[in-house]
Amino acid sequence: MQILAGKHNFDFMGRRKLAMLFSLILVLASLGSLLAQGLQLGIDFTGGTLIEVGYPEPVVLEEVRETLRAAGFGDAVVQHFGSARDVLIRIAPRETASSAELSSQVLQALQVKDPGVEMRRVEFVGPQVGEELTEQGGLAMLYALIGILVYVALRFEYRFAVGSVVALLHDVIITLGAFSLFRLEFDLTVLAAILAVIGYSLNDTIVVFDRIRENFRRMRKGTPMEIMNTSINQTLSRTLMTSFTTLLVLIALVVFGGKVIHAFALALIIGVVVGTYSSIYVASSAVLSMGISKQDLMPVKKEGAEVDDRP
Image (tube, helix red, strand yellow):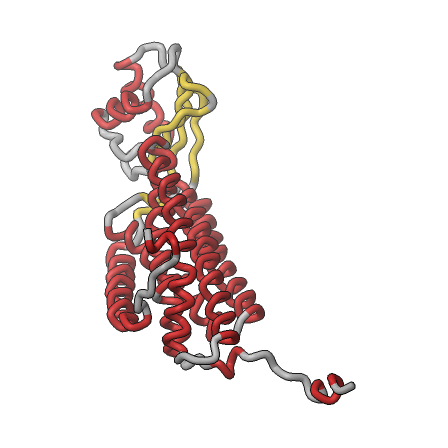
């Protein structure tokens, strides 16, 4: 209750070295996993076969997945398309079979369970499209980070810009590392979640930075570490409540949203948790490590201002 009421005084910056060590371990583990085994790219990036089938009656997706799993298509992505009777199936490319052969095998497996299943359409996503998506997705994240660096540099002192980008890179690398380490499928929805994590983390960081800048100018006594601790404690209630309410929605999506949106919600959950941590520890610790002081944040006095104020 004290945290929600704002009556607390935790020594966050006093434990910044331990927190930075923890972050360094997570980042190195994430980079190691990304370099060793990479990401398990979905059909959006690797290419594959997209099959639309129609059922005479509404069908449960889990039954379709179980049928395909028994036929050797355990990696197939299954979702409703338009109605409960229309099903969209996405299958990763296989060297041993063409797109036409895969679609025939899938239809035969489904018709064993329900003879009324009809093939609606078959599309093949080539690997060239996947390569373009991979390149464009990487450029989207890079442009977002550059834009954020410019924005924060214009709004704050340059040390804050560096600190915010360090925190964002920290969040993105750990989120990607979690997907690599646990072999979770990385598709376009996850890429969208990564970009959303960048925006969420930046918003949290700017709230903390705003209070730090305000307190540096307002508090006459206190070291930079003490002022940062005070600022983080003052914004802690807002940070935790925002993260908590966001996580409630995301957990509901994971539990009730189905397989199609599962990876998207899971990426956001990881990003929100890591982003909340980084806005408290990583961003502020990076600014403090670069030697921020009151003189750096004081408004610049214009020459002749004192003369102009005289009657």
